[in-house]
Amino acid sequence: METGQRYTLEPRHNLPMLRRSFLQTAAGAAVAAPAEPIRLGIDTYSIRDLRWKAIQLLDYAAGLKLDTIQLSGLGDYESLDPAYLAKVKDHAARLGITIDAGIGCICPTSQSWSPKVGAPQEYILRGLRVAKAVGATSMRCFMGASADRRGPLPIEAHMETAVKIFRSVRSEARDLGVKIALENHSGDLQAREVKTIIEQSGPDYVAVCLDSGNPIWAIEDPLLTLEVLAPYTVTTHIRDTAIWEHPRGAAAQWVAVGEGSIDYREFVARYRQLCPKAGMQLEIITGRQPLIFPYLEPDFWKAFPKTPAAEFARFLALAKRGRPFTASVAADQRRDLERSLDYCKKTLDVGVKWRG
Image (cartoon, rainbow, N blue to C red):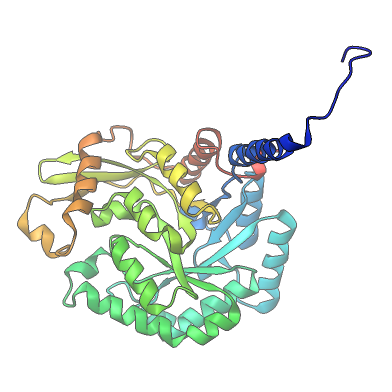
């Protein structure tokens, strides 16, 4: 400022214009403000062969500067004793890591169902109580798998059973304050079908565990799955898929994030818009042989008779853009998970703690 320079107020009649200018500038600054980072974590199935239990899994996540973890099965705990579960909750709180909980198949008509877990209602309630005890606000579960789409019952029958089971535990789930998070699992359900179960059960206590690797199994573009299920999504399984054309239709193989056909920059951009509060938990599954989807053969469509043409067109476009995965199929669970986490942090800008 120059010494002696004089300043005068604008005439009073110009003050509204100045106020409008200020508000417009402030609004622009608010729009330009960076979005809150998406929390980053892991689903424990990614490193299942290590056979670690909850405390060691939490320490591992903390060492990677992660924000969340999904303890996706009751086998992740040394016991279900209340004192031990309280210890897990306290340890997670000290590390600053949010826990999402989980169980397995809840549908007794599914080929994936195991009677060993007891009655389905008892199994769900056991999982919800464990989730509550460790401080989780969601509990992942699933209905079945792709085999159910070709079994003696139509997929709608399994869906109806799942809705009945969920409704039977409605009051307890609400009282506990833990949402049941239904996963689109292993080709059992397309996004529209998951949405139907959620809405018929009650979205106030039944939500979604969004798996971005399984839509391919249900001939669905993962970005479409996100668009349909994001309003209900509270927890996730995130992984990449290489998909390409095959003489019988298409082939696909799960790979580390950033090595497949899914445009994860676009996926994360939409994720930030649609469900930014849900943590991105990587469930990396590598080393498996490609899956074949023979959609050029009429029998294939017996499993997916109601698939809208527009939805299949998106899947088909994804396959046409893709290329065969030619790298070694040998898997190293920990290496592949950490490689994927590194890509999510440095390329996709996902995660909170690693920044500082």
